Length: 136
Image (cartoon, rainbow, N blue to C red; front, side, top):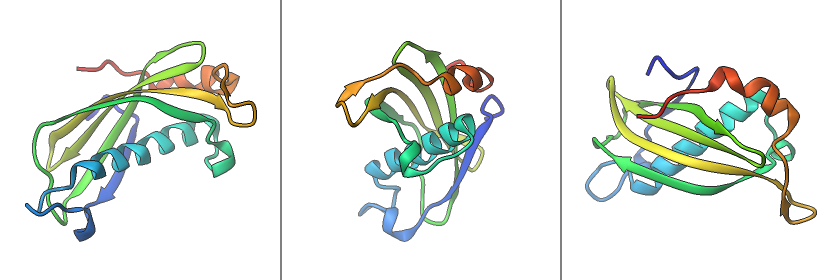
């Protein structure tokens, strides 16, 4: 957990559960989204809908331990690689001091008006290096 400069706190709500009273699988990915938004908000100095200029091109995850109602999870988010048009991320979800979920993803920077990918913004190149982590 210490390797991540971005740790996003999320309280597990009743509506986030599945029939077995575990955190529902799609919710893990929603929690990862919160971590991504916090990361890029810190890098860019702001985070509004107009500032989100990337799309998720790849997302994979490994379930390790179940998460339950009422637990407070921490989503650790870091960068593993910066490319010309994309950034690779590594994230872990922690609960009760242990890793419950691991994820790798790639976000591609995108020009929504031209409907095409674009270069990683200069501000991301300039500020992202302090968020570099090694994945497990």
